[in-house]
Image (cartoon, rainbow, N blue to C red; front, side):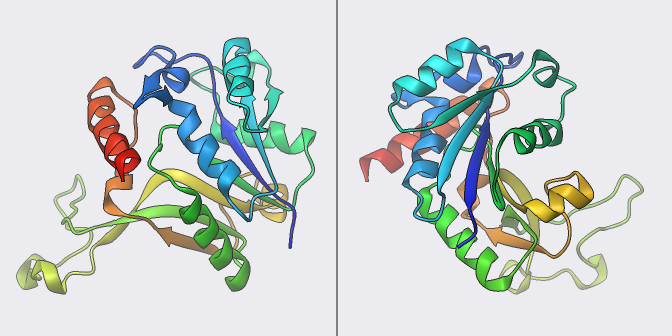
Length: 221
């Protein structure tokens, strides 16, 4: 089995929700939810956090999950810094064949999702993969042209396949894709479909209460 490593980028700054990545939600720091899922995965060999914040580093270590922390330079923790720049910096420091980049803003992610996706990734010999949710909504472009249906033959919901939208939960990337494209996605791309509620990401304060309610429901099951 190829050496598979998970990377969770956790920068210290957040304008919308201050200290978002370590703010308590449903009884845990936000980042703890995905860190637990990554460490529980049967197909992920090691889990790393990339951060610019000593506070975040200490909180991650205090979770006692065996997660390794890699400090990144401040220029890779600005609002302008891309996730790709963080991934490429990480790839320079760590050896792996397959990288699973996980977003802390998707705490509804579970270990079973990661394992199912990785099995499909390996069996289908994809070069990269993204997580997505199927939505049965009709999309239009700014030019007034429908994107995913024909208004003259408007389908019933039960007959409509819908469209897949990235939910940002995770991306799987073979090292060859990073080397060739300098991007998390490239080559033969697979899509792992996740439950509808996982479309929710915590980006704004209004997202917090909704996701927290769902997390508490999951915890009570």
